[in-house]
Length: 166
Image (cartoon, rainbow, N blue to C red):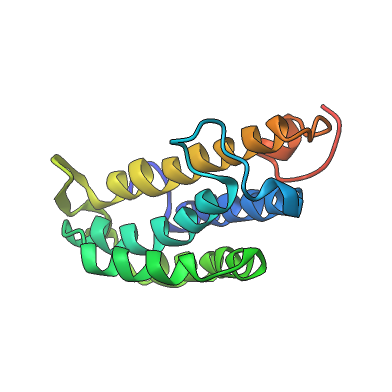
């Protein structure tokens, strides 16, 4: 990997999980069914999606083969999880990323894959789909929380995963 070291990539993903868990700590039970419009995911549906996204996309980024059956199985398992189980599952992703990415070689990161019609190196695909996906969806969670009245949340909550003034 040339732009980021393996350790930096793992650190970025673990930081995303840290922020996500921090934001989850701000969710009140009455916020779980919030959805901005009828066709958008609710808060709990968003968290269920996040339990599936990274763990299923990482092998796809490594091989260029998306496993639809694995996606469906993990999605079905996530549907059965309550909020506490979802948070626990999300927390386990920090170790998952360390283990899976830690086992990759530099050659693995440079290998070109084609996924969803785009060709790129495995490393770039991981950044584009998983790291950016985490950033986008935790921002969505942050906005849901703000819309549900968590006015005290600010940039520190969104980008550092801590309570604090700016």
